[in-house]
Every structure is written in C-alpha cells, then in structure tokens.
Length: 431
Image (cartoon, rainbow, N blue to C red):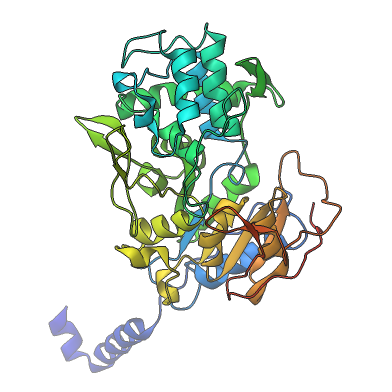
C-alpha cells in the first residue's frame, strides 16, 4: 500500500490530508443525562440540578475524568424517609441483639454516659445475662425500655440526664452509643441483622409502628425515588457520589446498595476493631485520635463522629485525603471540596456549606440548615419539601438572628452563613 501511494501522488496527498484532518478533529462530548421528568421536584429545582450536572459533568468544558466532581449526600431523611440507624436499633431490642457489656461495665459503652444512666442500666439489665451474652430485651420490658429511653431521649426512665460533657458541634452521644453497642460483633454479624431490619422496614406499609419498651416507634423506611434518580444521573454524568451519614458505617453500607452507591463510598460512624470484632471505641478524625476507654474514667478520643463539624472532617479526610487537625476546617482550595451536597438536618450544615456548585436542603423544619438555605449566601442553595409526608409550614420565622443555632456547649446562639455573617430571621416558604 505504501508503494502504491508513493507512485500516485494525488492519492497519496489525499490520504495524508485525510490523516491530518482526523488528527486535528476533537472527539464529540458525551451527551448530558437529565433527571426523570416524571418525578416531581419543587419549583425550578429539577432545572437547577440539571444545569449543575451540565456545568460540572462529562459534557462540560474542562471535565477531567481523573478528578471527578464530588457529590456528597447525607442518608437518613435525605436519601430515605426515616432513619436506618433507628430501624436497626429497634430491631436489636426486639430480637435480643444488644449484648451485656464486657465485665457488665456500661461505662465502657460511652465516655459520656453518666452515673445515673449506668445505675439505671445496671438495675434494669445487670442480672439478666452474663457479660458478652445477649440481653433478653424482647421479653424483659424494663431492660428494653431503659435502653430505648436513653437512646431516644438522652435520659433515663426516671428523667435523669444520660449523657454529658460532649461538644455539641462534634458529637451526638446517642448516635455514637448505638454504634458502640455493636461491640463484640463482627461486621458480618451486624450486617446480618441490619439486612433483616432493612427487609422488614422496606416491606412494612407506610405509617407502620411497633411497640418497643412500651413505646410506639416507627417501623418503615422508604427510598426517595427522586433522590435515587438524582444519584444515578450524577453518576452517569461523571460525578463521584458519596454518602456521609451519622448512622453506623456497617448499617449504611447495607442500605447504600438501594441507590447504587458502593460500600467504599460510604462514610458513617466508624469503630476501632480488634480480632475482627468491633470494640466500644470510635475511629478518630482531625485533632481527635482513635478512642480508648478503660471504663473507669480514663478515656481518649471517642468524642467526634460524622456529626456537624465531624461531617466536614470525615469528608476532608476520606474523600479528599486531608489529615490532621486541618481536616476540621473549610478547605480554601475549591478544587479540594465537593461540588454538590444534600442534607436535611443541622448535622449536615458544615459539609453543605463547603459545597461549591449547589446545595440541596430537604425541609424538615431544622433551624440551622433552613436558616442557611433560605438566606442563600452565594445563591447556591435550593430547598425541597420532603418527598414523602412533607412537613407543614412553620408559621413563625426561624429565629436565625438570635437563638436558631447551638454552639459547642449547647447554648442557643445566632446562626451564621458560610461567610461567617449572622443570618437574619427567615420565613418558611417551601413546604
């Protein structure tokens, strides 16, 4: 063929011209994928989400497949209706899955558990099982109720404070306590009863309740079709999608498959393991080391979870590889921050404030997130009612400028936006 072209100059010239033209042409950009038009979104939210995917995704100028834009979702009441941590905990109490603590020492289970709570748990549960054995919570209502009340109310059944001494911007001790009560189990064992709880809660009708400790608690969960579609379309548009949850790591891993997110893209409350079993101690982030607790008042770490400032920390640590105390701070380089974030609660505020392109707030009438969303600093916030059983309108404005938020000590303080400015009171307009 080479000889033929050399003897026929005209054809050789045409072939070379064709080759040069081919080398100079650009590959066509992939088409943008848009959200399902049959699924209802509030106002112009669908259009804004589609525009964000178009401007940052595979069909945008400068898209880099080696450095995909990141999207981060809270889980409970953001991706699903109701709380999968609660669902798992209620299942544990109904099926004798809570273990008597090591040495029957409840102090091991949380460094913030107060003496009154320890006494209440010893009284209600101490004689029912050997250390490390399952407590018969399915049949012993007193033990079941004491554990439930401490978890749901943060108090004993006699009204005594159960947890104290923690940083309200880093820790919700009841959330952590659920995770810490997995101590003694392997990951496979926890995920076995998580799967059982998941099956029950997905199959139960909406509004199904169950009785735990003499109290009616929720017994159903649903995945939001709109969020499942959004996650799928973000992935198809070349985004790197993550879950950032204040529910336990092994629990959210089980549920994440419902929306096509792999387990290595899930960040929940993470425990220290020993001999392939969970311990009472929590993994650290930022300036907080992995936890230790001798059950006699000496403890380190165990003081920060994926909660408010902890969600920022774990986002920076796991997704962007930032280590040390700086992981607790907002990263100045926008290329090292998530493009998109979605949440429903005050626990989500810092990782949502850090998003650079768009921030989706699901309205659950939570003050700090709604103050920020309605104030809309930078024009990047959008608000959507809950997709199932949306909350009614809050009739009075959110007290953003005075008492809408909490500081590290738990005191009510003014709310501030991502620029550090005090937010004026905001009316509830999307419901």
